[in-house]
Length: 480
Image (cartoon, rainbow, N blue to C red; front, side, top):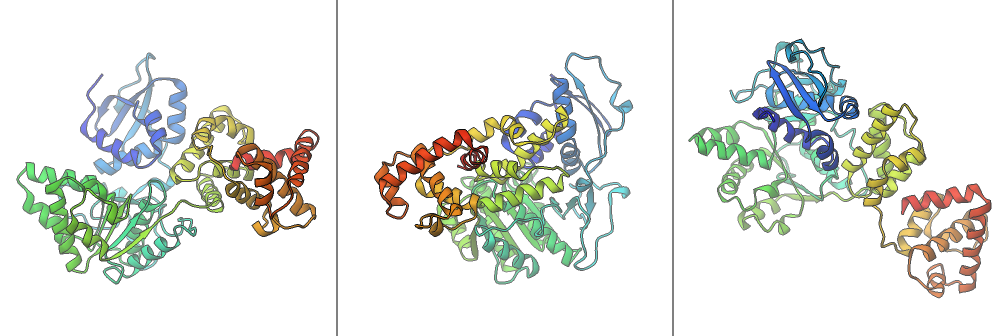
């Protein structure tokens, strides 16, 4: 196996943040570089199917990642293992252009020689004031942000409303009362999206804003390099005087790395004392970041600390529809409902599900249907299936599906629009929980257990004779 060039390892780090762990491991890690010549790369892929899937779903991301770490545009081509060699990379056929939303634009001056200068064709004049940014990757003074990850594309839910509002305030009034700002929550819920959105909004307001966006891991790696090269003074100067805004992702990574943490502590103090906007993300609130020194935890707590929570069902469906529309992909409502009902805690997994459906539809030349989606996503859906269902979770899904309230579900009304959902809920409660008939009866407004028996038998009978009711039950079971 040929030794991969160093820039490909850096590109893989960027690609890892652009997709789900499952998709990264399955489709990007197996790539091997056969040859590199100037700005052309030939990758080896294991199968023709792999080749087709990669070109349809990841080529744009590969081109973007290469551009992010090298500052230049590449041509890529693929060779299936065991097939006849392609022409040399210099003679490779030009690849498809990256997706329109992935071209590179430069809005801020680059003062450090460590960042390669793009060709003139890659530079677009910055917009004025609050004008709309072109779509694509923007090179900040340090790091790249994606204009797709702006405030307009962020689907706000009750669990992210406060964080979204705080991020907008920090972007529009940098260095103000929301400084520093710490956004915390589990992976895949939109923290990085909000960091990008802050940078984008600040550049809309001031195209000359000097913005640093990078991960805590990058900060640590750069500091280690500066120590190794005896250039810590240059590192101090770069991060303590070069930026108007300091946006750092996954601050928990610094914990336990004493020298890097000390450097970050002094950098943070300097920027905060100079009224530069500091925004950080972490997977936990400050008090639970046990690997961080107490003095840094105290600094983090002195600003605004907000969390992001998993999106509710309606928000997950809205996210799927927005992502599908952005990719010009038609996904029926029932498929969105089914996916959103299973994948509850990670937006990146929702995106991964759409990528897989898009690949299946493209490769097989089929439309996306409910049956096709169930088969294509069977492993993802099974991994996310909740086997510890409660009456409350079942009732919530039934109410959401039929668009009725919990009070109406548990009422004594015999109107079909309330009685049928109630009977379905009783049937599912009996099927998926260990509750006794009297316990189920009590949970549904104190009814008699004979009512529950009647409901269960009625649903079991109609599942055989009524396709409509069968669809209702199957859809709700997919949501559970």
